[in-house]
Image (cartoon, rainbow, N blue to C red; front, top):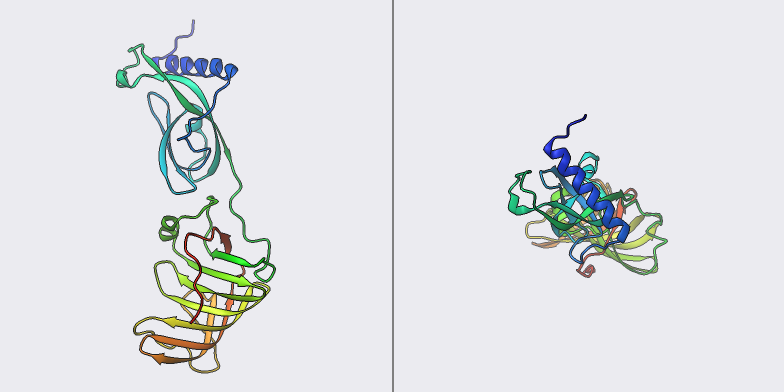
Length: 256
């Protein structure tokens, strides 16, 4: 006769309870995110503990079936299915002989969603409106300011009307410059203005110079308007390979 450990007995009891409730049907509570990115998985005495971050940046910890902890899900953006089930009561404090249980909503399934892809349209083909592009990648459909700060990179936040594009090219938590010009495919050609105390001219002549290390934006024919304004009469911004993300809460500002 096969003997089961205490942990196996509790796990079997939990699974049996879940299967019974599934037959009756159940739904998640309003506070449990249907879609989120898994930050950490921890197998405990009561259940699998799943640390989540939803697309708005809100974090939470949810109970899940033990098999969820056995899957390679950390860092994945997933669609979550919840089912009601019984787990060892918190009052038992990990004592498997306690005999008490409580009913909770458990994550029973986590389906991995496809990551956010690079834009399918060129900048030129976009409809009129406000947009934001980033050179980073994420599984989140909504990229929060916290995510940008954590990952860094470059961002172009702009408004498009016809082929006219005007917006701010910036390094996350770094230097920024306003770019205004005409869209052609995934490039914007025109002029640029940087407003920054002590800003220096990158290129005063006919040769293009990169605005920072990314090489996405090149400028030339620059000159100082005053101590805090540098204007470039020629600028070329290449957005190929950048990802379109949510526009954010701020309205893109134009160049002065």
